[in-house]
Image: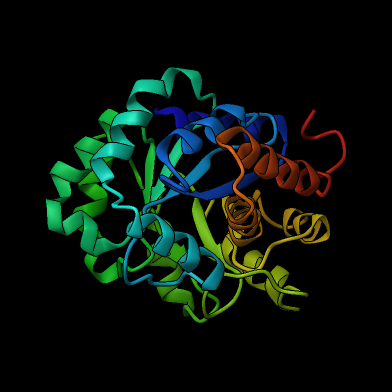
Length: 273
């Protein structure tokens, strides 16, 4: 059992719900990434997603795309990020999941990439453009190296497809609350609870919901039916704004933690203390 699996087991045993914050890796630099990750509290955040910037985003909305463009323009290298995280991993208290495009994994070679991610201290991978029909070998390889593959279920996934995804995804399932790209929304879909309930009937694995979540009220709504709320654009927007005003690494981290603290107010009362 790796750190990610252990964290979800602990969450379940305590009857708690939690946040899964997303940050763009290497933004605005690797030192800032580490500064943010160090500050995350495992009592509030069951894990953290670190997005790998990519020139052709798969499901990322304009806020996250902006952060990707800025990082890539500065000459971002994956190995630089992995090296910094590896050096500072002991000071980071939450499990880490990398979120990236399938093409990045296959450009280096699946086993080589998984080994490098694991060696740096990552505990799992989310690959949004990895189709379930092609995921068996990658999931097996990820499991073998104790860096499991988390797969995404979309609201447009049929029942049989959702079951196949749930069977492969470890140790939790990423439920995409709406079709389209990431980004803050005024309201979450009216049928979100229904879809999560249907998915839960097919699996005993934890379900975390992402896409469109940006307020404490959204977090409360999601955590009424799911195990965790994944928040990306609301956090990265604050990072973009901090970078625009020339903030230091510490100040960017302050901005991120302010968002997470506010969103944590939506967690069930007494469950994140």
